[in-house]
Length: 547
Image 1: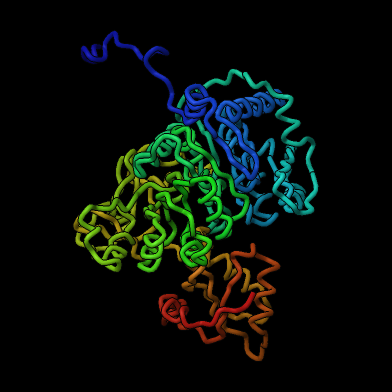
Image 2 (image 1 turned 45 degrees about the horizontal axis):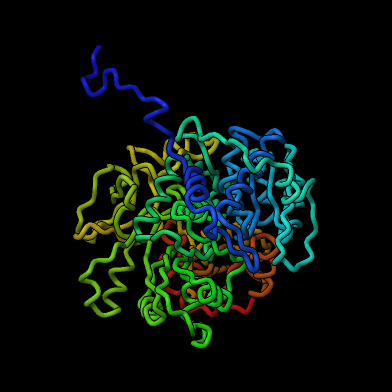
């Protein structure tokens, strides 16, 4: 049966079709701009030719060790050159990269290594102790590769079978890696923050990573040889796909082991940084830094912010510094940012507070995302663009995950009705922009990290003096939001806020521990349900503790 003259006898072949993969970006950068700088880390300088050769060595060494298509290689690393290289070398071997959050405890890391069936893990010595404890409960054999960063000055010991540089020495710098047989093949595994139960494993495909990396360029009008500072953790949604974005522009990866205001501003000045991303806490650190630290920064610096809407004070402070702020929104399941609050020319004539109101919106779809919509999650009908009718933000397109690893039920629910359901409640504005109104699962976003109120509540409920507890977000100038706990004690029980904090510290990662506690009788409905909306109103006035 004929399929039409434009399809008959016009086959898809190797000559006219190639699977989209962001791995092609580093090959081109090394070929076209071999001597251009690719990586800066303290006194270390490497070109794109050198970086490409190192990624091929990594792929070759992994393949020689029996790691290949569909295997998982994890990485517990800060923003060092090795983390940049892992984003290319691991998938070049056919394996899937699983970047691990460096703020997690041993139990959670062990769960992820087990669930993802990691066959190897790269570990910076700063995290060797927590990784050693995590591996104690991992059933499969895991090759541990130690990473020695010269900038690390701590006492962490090597725990692995081989050190990273020795591994690379065993690899072939001319290793002939192959693109994925299908652009739908997995490239990365990222875990959600586990807002209910265990975290879910979000699987990225090569096509999605490729398209979001290019969308980053388009949203920022990012030029060739941009100088990108790694303030955003590469473990978070693969650094919003920017390891591949920077390679596509043959730019410079300015690595940064730890974020502090002076260090960031010094690098912006000395390296001529043009672009960086970060949560509101990073922007606030820079805005509130002493003026003398900002002296000498003459170039335009483009900053991308996500996690919470930028307030007027932040926008005004960034403008005084000569920084241009772009607000984006997304989730792990959509490769990081998938909408942008695209600024209109006429906004520049408005005062800073009105501009802040407009810039606080989550915006419009990324260039290469097919669609974003606000719909009734039950009927799937699109809500009117009146700025008032609340629905759920949903995405559709190439910049959406393959699904949740080993969780077909959750995958099916997430894609119900042909859209990815974010769980975030929002309105559609008359001009087509989207604005979040609430978060359906009571997530607390602290320093760009998601914290489950349920997880914190469960920890507090374990204390023998606690009768009932509710945890909500408390506004925080530094972190954006922090957990605030309202605690109702059992009759005749006594416990101090400090004791409860210490109790939480023994059971939670440090960033999840409440920073404010109020003892009270919790407001409840007639059916006994705690009224969290009432507690949110009070959270701002609860005094923070000195932790």
